[in-house]
Image (cartoon, rainbow, N blue to C red; front, side, top):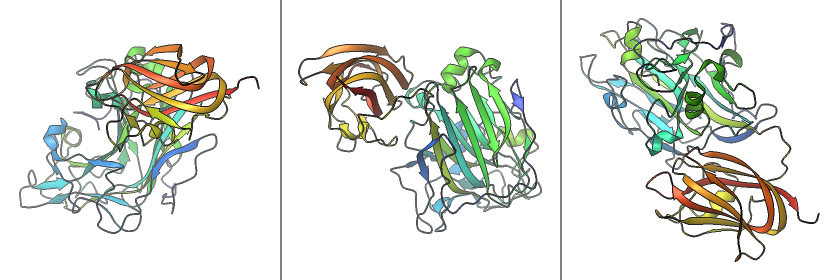
Length: 439
């Protein structure tokens, strides 16, 4: 969510024609199947009972006074079902409510983010984040100060890497009921830097006809299969803006983009961005505007190389320790990007998988939580007791690792010797690829 005093600056990148005003509103009854070449990594269609709180296994509430977010907002974010709830018809609702006669005080609203922060593109792959959303049904006459957003922050932010260097991608922002949308990347340093902070670089304001009154799809793709890499923004399937890594300092791009993210929905009131467009709120601003979300989904396209089956998935997995029963070793090989193994808070720690027979290993993918190992070895063994190291990696501390291997064994161990954070080594997925030895 842009820490912007003005709208996001269009710097470089490739604009496309805005979405047609006649584009159909999208409100599918179920999460759409993955686009061609992609698979569904995670989704939520918010099928909870009416007026129910969110599943805190999947979501966390960001509560507190709006000014603490650094954007000048004036609302207080709560976890009350008055402000954040499922409506019983398959929607997440974030509702802004006003109490009193002073438009500058008395606002409450909602902000939520995913517990999981492992959503990203592998080197050579693509990730797509998409949601079907109805913006608050307000107008420029009664919506001054409204600031709905669908966005994501870089996972390294959760372990102390500062904003904006840790990265932020804004998929949808609208302000003041203007029937528009902005797509923005934040990176580098603030103020100034390669992303012109705190404004960011992006599409600028684009028309979004009917987005206050109907459901439309908003999506972003991070494409690491192209050179230079790209971020593409979509409204109802139309690619309306593309930003290339060639347009940004390469180190700043890599630090902001080439890692995992977590997803955020929020409905802010007031702040620098609405103010830059004559915002408010003011005496005419209506209470009760809602950001309605029909579904959110993450889709991934793998790298083009034919690596075959993940031979680690579902295989017996053990570890040196676990932070708690909630984070067992088996979570790292269950194929679910939202579950994880987390160790005790000390070094060294290890996680190992029994492949059931010996394999000649060609590749390993490790997707870490923000609390990653800062250094680790991948080791193999024929008997589970005598180990040989086939590769080492110093994360430093990127959280998506895709490594070429040259070794064999029935047992494979990730031997973590250092940690990025004060917490344990936390691994969402260990994927291994290879062929049976002697096959």
